[in-house]
Length: 112
Image 1 (cartoon, rainbow, N blue to C red):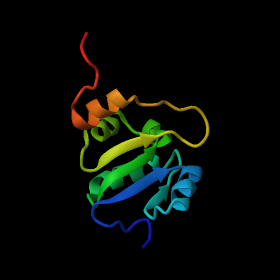
Image 2 (tube, rainbow, N blue to C red; image 1 turned 90 degrees about the vertical axis):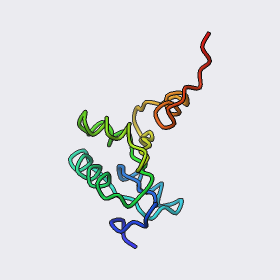
Image 3 (cartoon, rainbow, N blue to C red; image 1 turned 180 degrees about the vertical axis):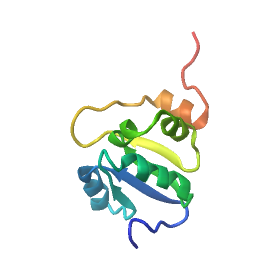
Image 4 (tube, rainbow, N blue to C red; image 1 turned 45 degrees about the horizontal axis):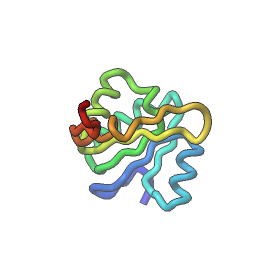
């Protein structure tokens, strides 16, 4: 199966070459390599295909998205979008509380 043919409910990985190689090494088959020029278009295609339940994308892909695409990704539950740090360079880490609030709509912090 090629990276363009996804099983229903499957996982898609979008990211730079190093990230793609890493996910392929752990057995992921549905991996698409991106560049700064192709990231937004590949992400948009993944969001409209509706053939997978999880999209794992590099933070470099996130930076290439428009504000509306970022907002759509953060609000999306099908597919669920998770941004992971790139294998090299600087990155941002989303806290567990922020992730739970975004995905589940539940805050893990206890009010004082």
